[in-house]
Length: 145
Image (cartoon, rainbow, N blue to C red; front, side, top):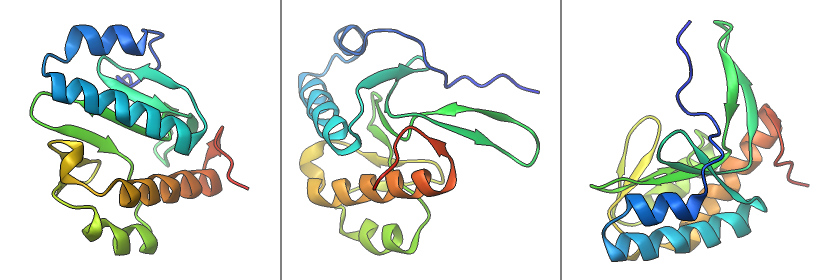
């Protein structure tokens, strides 16, 4: 079975940002996302893998037997765009996603160029919906009351 790459590393988030993110606007947006996601998740930021900043943790196990831990919500300040790991496949998320602003969507994440391109209130709703979904469906440190 393949080893999971996205694991908690213990690296300091600020150390990662200062060494990895060269664009000053992307760096400022990264610190803003950290502040917002920390508030929304009530979890401190942690490094997962070489470039993902995650909040909260949950344990997953697939039918195949593969299992591991993952952040509840997360982002990565990649060179081309931010990769936001904040989407759950729920009816509520499907309804609010089109209101996010300028983005691209793949199966696993949402890509945005800069925070000015999106509505942060909609991002908050997506994050809260994802936290709620994971809290209800997985072993999670993020229980929403």
